[in-house]
Image (cartoon, rainbow, N blue to C red; front, side, top):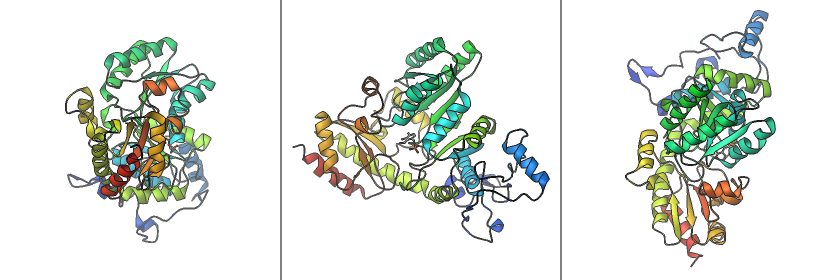
Length: 427
Ligand SMILES: Cc1ncc(COP(=O)(O)O)c(C=O)c1O
């Protein structure tokens, strides 16, 4: 869609906040009969005003020519459509990136991004734990395409990250560094500055700087903006907080226009684009994103505090409970502006105890996924992370007694009352 008067993000010198921009940025009601909300453009293809337009627009979407500032022109919904462009512009402005792309799921965003930058024979350096699907993609699926993966667990240790970088370089060209911070489900942090340092070492040694990709699903864009810390591409499962109501599947990548360009090409080629209806739903969800994430984060802080004092709990992996001093606290203060609402606990008594608690919950729903308005609980070791080899799970702190919570926007007293009664079954 051509850029119009709705693409303004400041009044004079006053920079508008994302909470304001999410209500109107990138959509001009004048182009749609004055409709306050964007219509859903349920069309697979777009009429060109002339054959010359058709030729030019195809050159733009195929990457043969650079599109003008206003965009590539609408061609065919696998490449672009008005609903995806509105959401992409809003996601980009939220994280202050130059451009964004939406995808049919978080995994298709991650897979399309990796395949745009990694080739057979390459090695992907990555943090651990990663979401189980990403770990499986790197270590199993992509190994079938001749790509290798090299993991590091302590993302705040310069020695561990650099050792992993050197080990990866011995195996092949390191074309991509994939990190997830905070990690799902243990909330471990990766220091962006150490990853940038590792990328510089790899660049110097291999004469090729790897692209740094960060899965920003757990905190972003409200509580974390990796692009401001040297990360090249922020990737999201929009299914989680941004969609926010557990009623859609979607993903996104955000970054500089030139960095995003090959990912855009590949998305068009393999068709990992998101449909207009889901894009419209995301636009509506973005209007309340900040409200929802802040409310859920406040709730989670109370719930995590309660659990940390409970005698049946060994450990609570929540950013709200980080020690006041130390390396992890420093990384948190430098990178994050809030703890979010996904965290895990280790229950005393292992698998049997964890299952007993999960089966007794009444307000928390027993389901995978996170970031919705409702609170969810799951057992990562046997569900989301069941495909991760046992030794990797153990190394990254996902035990038999680990339960993951995604805290929603219910009243926190009700969530705590639910946990009181569920934990009482262990007495
Ligand atoms: C951190 C993280 N990244 C990526 C994904 C994959 O997203 P999707 O299910 O939308 O493909 C998930 C899903 O749980 C996730 O938690």
